[in-house]
Image (cartoon, rainbow over all chains, first blue to last red; front, side, top):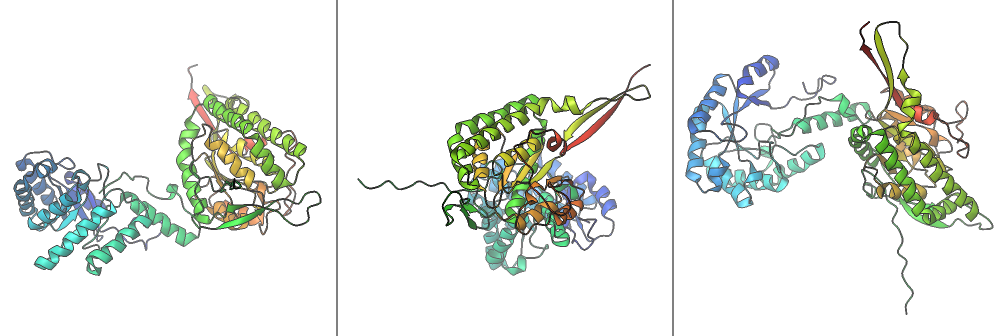
Length: 237
Length: 302
C-alpha cells in the first residue's frame, strides 16, 4: 500500500530486505501480491568466502524469499577472474532453488561500458534471471547509458538463446520524469515485451515517493509535498 | 571604427541560487512606466514568464534550503543579510535606473527610494538576533516548571510581491520573511519585475545560501494559485494581490486553507485589496506573521 490515502495506487513488484527480515516482511505483506526479495552473498560489499555467501543465500530462501539479490565479486571481475565470478553466480543460482536470482553487477565500479556488457553476459551465461545495476550503496548507481548497455545485452541474449532475462536499474532514479526516460529506452532498445514488472523493474525507494506525489497532484489538483508521503527514502534497491 | 554593440542583460528567474530561464521557454515584454511628456510606452526588457513548474521548482529549492538557513545562528543570519545591503549599495546605479524606469520616477525620487530600500533591509537584518528576545521569554506558570516560549520560523513562505512598489515594497515583504529563518518563493511584480531580478543578483553575490530567496517573474494570476494550493508551502503573503490583474485574493486564501497555511492578507478592507504605503515606518507585524511559537516546560525542583 504505497499510498494509504489512495487505495487504487498499484503496489510495487517486490520489497527488498535483508535475509533475516524475510519472515517479518511476510507477516506485514500478508497475502498481497508483492514478492519478497532478499539481499544475499554478503550484500552490499560481496566480501565473504564462497561458503558464507552460499549459506547466506540458502538461509534467505529457507526464510521464504521469492527472489534473491546477489552481488558479484567486483574485485575478482576487475582482476579478470571471469571463471571465478561465473562459478559463484552459477552456484548461487543453484542455491536459490525456485527463487529468481537477480545479479547485481555494481556498474558504478565496473569502470567501462565494455565491462558492463561483459558482466551482463557473464551473469546470463551463469543463469541469472535478472541483471541489476547497483546495490544503491555507492555512486554513481543506475545511469541511463549503463542501462542502455544492459538492455542491449538482454536483447542480444534472447536473440541468441530464446531466453528472456530481466533488467533492473537501481539507485539514483528519483523522479517520475527520469523513470519515463528509462521506460522509453526499454521500449526502444529491448522491446515492449520487457515493459512489465516481470522483466523490467526500478529500484524505487525514492522514486516511489515521487510517483505518489505526482498521483496526489493529479487527484487533488494541488502540488503535494514530502510531508504527505513516507519519509524513509535512502537511495537504492 | 564601428559602433559598439550593446551588451544587454537577459532577465531570468532566480531559483536555488541559479538564474534559469523559464522551463516554459516563454518571456514577456516589460515596458517603462509612463513619465513626463512621453506618450508611447517604451520597451525595457524581455522578462521570463515563469510557469507553475518554475514555481514548483522554486518551492523545492526553498524547502531544501530551509533547515540550513533556520539552523544558522541568528547572529550569522544578521551578518549575511547586512551583507546584502552592502551589495545593494554597490549596485545602486543599476537599482536606481530600474526603479526609475519601472515606476516612472524622477532621478531624485528614485535615489531616495533605493536608499529607503537599502535602509529597510538593514533595519530587518538587525532584528535577526533581537526579535526572539522581544517575542519570546519566560512564562510565569503555577507549577514547578521553567516555562519558556521561543519563536521559530514557519518554513517555506510564498510571497506575492507588491505590484507598484517594485523595490522598496519588495524588500519590505522579503526581508521580514527570511530574517527569522524562513525561506521564500517570491512572485515579482507583474508589470515591474526588473528590480526584483536586480535584488536577486544582489542576493546571489552576497552570502545568502541558494534557495533562501527564489524569484519568479511572470503573470501573478497564472502562478499565484499554484503557490496558494501547494501542500509544501507553509504560509503565503498576499500583499501583491492588490492591483494584480485577474487576482481575487479571497480565492487564494481559500486555496491556502486546504493545508492550513498561514495567510497574510493584503491591505485594505473587504474584497478590495490596497497596497500599503511602504514609505511608512515599519513595525514587527510582517516578521511576526511568519513565526510559530515553541513553548518548553522544563521541570525544576522545589
